[in-house]
Image (cartoon, rainbow, N blue to C red):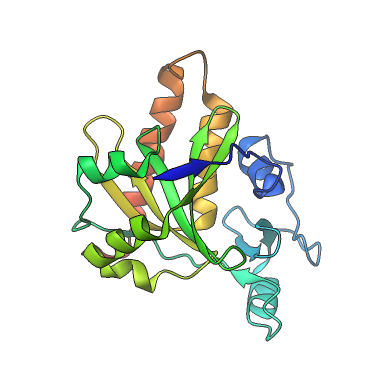
Amino acid sequence: MVTDIARSSERMPGQALKRFAERRPAIERCDLCSAELSSDHEHLVEPATSELHCVCRACAILFGHQSSRKYRRVPRRIEQLTGFRLTDAEWTGLGIPIGMAFFVASGEAKRVIAIYPSPGGPIESLLRFDSWDDLVAKNPVLNEFEPDVEALLVNRIGEDRLYFRAPIDECYKLVGLVRQHWRGFSGGGDVWNHIGEFFASLNDRSDRQR
């Protein structure tokens, strides 16, 4: 089971969420050196604050590999896990109220955190250790994920059963899409079109499948 903490941008990377959910400036600049950024720029995570920073490649290399490890470089790898094992009953047992969420190991919290999108932003839930351990036992690939920067991204909306090893910035792009485009009680057709396009893009960019 999970325990909802009902946090949106207060503890979660609020600045990162704004970057994905709001209109971006005409020229984006590196958060660390102010260099102009390309549209496909890299990101660093600051584990102590869970904040994402938009950075140029030079800063991503320099600060992402410092021995102090104040920052962690977000990888570009995307992998669809076609053989992932998770039954409908097991998903229900996790207690997540919607069919879409991502799971990331937090170095600061020293546990796995489940986060799901909502019209108001990300909602954070803490997984019981035994729930995650059971999932890892069935899917050893989860042991390979990098803490703080890679997540298990799950889409079980409708008939979909999609599982990805995804960079954390891609997960927050999804949160931003929901926050930006949700309308009314059911979200409206526009938001579901954007969500469909998002997962289609992930699939197209997947490095490999297993």
